[in-house]
View 1 (cartoon, rainbow over the protein chains, first blue to last red):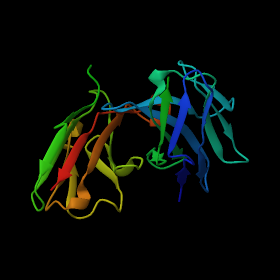
View 2: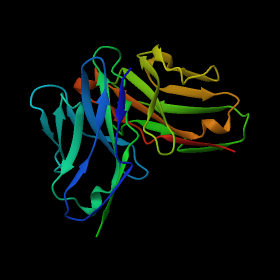
View 3: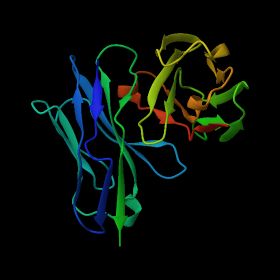
View 4: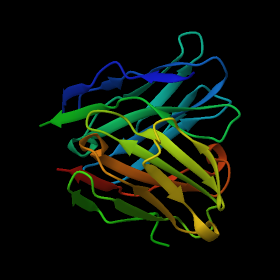
Length: 114
Length: 115
């Protein structure tokens, strides 16, 4: 069975500081990796994904994540956060084969303070 | 296209009552998923439809839960004899094909409170 562990339930950070949200996964088959963001009272939105190719993937709003197969990790980073980045962030995997269902971690609440 | 629509946004019901939620996916999306999200947890997979066929159900979906997708368009999720443990956010997502290629679009969810 596959599982996703997000090591921090909450991450407080000051505006313009760097941040890293950690994600590790466990799977007996190869996986595709995703980060979703959920703003208050809104649906989940895709932030970035790794399917194949370069292990470093970037989003349009400055986030990046690196797939590390040996450490089974997919940590999310941003060099300088904004107040507007305050949200819940979910790491997820899709195991290869099957019906493409997402398996989510418990989430990390990023709180950016002025 | 207004995305994935879920109704109602909020539902408060008494224990033992039946409730039904509706999900309208993006019109050209043939794949539809239901998830449940409880406080402090990530979404958990409940069930999956490809067109009108229900192809996978999680063991979380007890016999009190039933989902349908008649004609492969909108979907309904019904919970019979609700229990307090059913209180959660119920999310719907759809995709045009394999979600890894086409991506998933999530609705804003229906928040169920069982009192």
